Amino acid sequence: MSKNEPTTEYIQWGLPLDEIDQLGQRLVQFVKQFSLCLRNRTHDVSEYTFHYLSGLLRMKANRNMAEIGRKVGVPPQNVQHFMSNSPWSALAVIDAVQDEIKEHPEFRSGAMLALDESADQKAGEHSAGASRQHNGRLGKVEMSQVGVFLSLVTPRANTWIDGELYLAKRWFTKAYAERQEKVGIPEGRTFLTKPELGWRMIQHAQANKVPFDAVVMDDLYGRNAVLRQRLHKAGIEYYGDIPANTRVYLDKPRIVYPLTKRGKPSKRARIIAKQQVEVRNLLHSPGLERAEITVRPNERGVLHAEFARCRVWQIYDDKPREEWLLIRQDGNRVTYILSNARPDTSLETMAWRKTHRYFIERSNQDAKSELGWDEFQATKYLAWEHQLALTILASWFIAETRLDWMARYERDPELFAQYEVEVLPLLSVGNVRELLRAAMPLPQLSTQEAADLVIEHLINRTRSRKSRLQRQRVPET
Image (cartoon, rainbow, N blue to C red; front, side, top):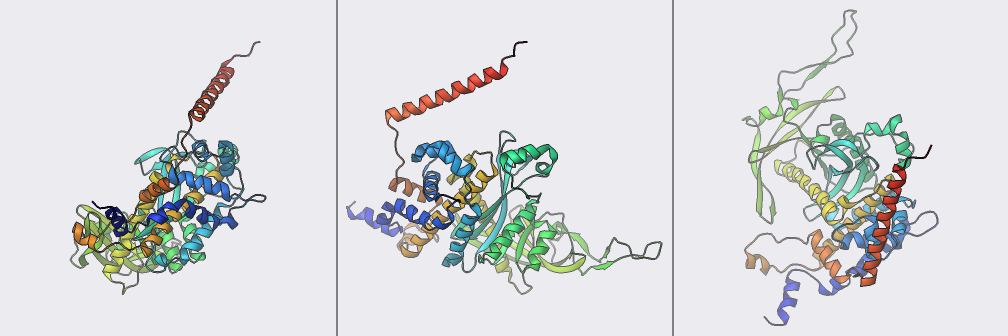
């Protein structure tokens, strides 16, 4: 191999070595762009933001506040204050990210909003929002903290753009009043269901003029008729998964109010329709429009799925409304979707938009495994909000870097022929983090620094044991 071959290979794959060397400086400039919203009443917190982001992006594990502080050379107690107590606005950071994203060419056409939740198991009820609730990741009820998240996705980019901490009803009871105050639940915060939290975030994105073609959501949100109607009234196209036993009408139903014994109209409406069916009974119906559609090329080949659809009726606000029932079949797996897409929307377009829900699962996984979301440990509500804002900031730094390099450093077309493929893999979040670690290595501990950490750990354990002994000691009478 000649000396020039490695350089040629970097160029072929669109990897600019000189810019990789400057990734640390790129992160510095990136944080500076948000300096106006990284302030509390008295201080600029940009420097702490940079250090914390650099820890999230470079560290491989143990990305809690204390460890991030140690790795980036900031006293852990300062990091703790920055995250849990400093009154800088997480919402201002999220708004600033959305303002940047809406101007980026990648999202001006064809982007989709994807709504989903993600749960993290907790050891106890000390953290804001923690309670025994369904944890989709574990598939059972466990002590968990649940967030509802909104991603903006295209086939080339996906990034969280908002999130809300779900607080179960018990958090608003008298029994939880002291705990609410301890973790800093904001005054005026009231119970909201997960679909209501999702709607609030979608409204927020719409108010910020974030461009998107439609909203995609799983059946927790898709089955919620109130959410679907809110989206419809707002002129937002939706694709909501629904359970297989959801009932729909094949003819326009009539809403009647029978007379009571006193001759007055009943308050309970009666729905009259000739054909009411569960959606699963339409899977093999001969009247459906059907097509096998190439959903998208991927690294494993080409993803195909069978799609079918028909027009159905649902009742919203005591009035019938016609919409699409879309059915996707991947082998034995069948998904049923309701959509208010226009009647003249092609099946191919609907299939394409529906499949974007995959990308929020990718966003959630990247946040957890690559950006340390599932390693975060804090009790306060403010710390959760700050962690959300900084995770969104880290995610956007990665996405913006990847998109910038894709635009300016094209892959060599010969790679397709060389590897006999139709699609080349995009840079992953992990790839960019690896490059950042090389450009901006984490400091290695000296022998003395390592010994100091061990001593600190031993002292903390000793103090904990002393406290336990004092609590166990029975006072003399």
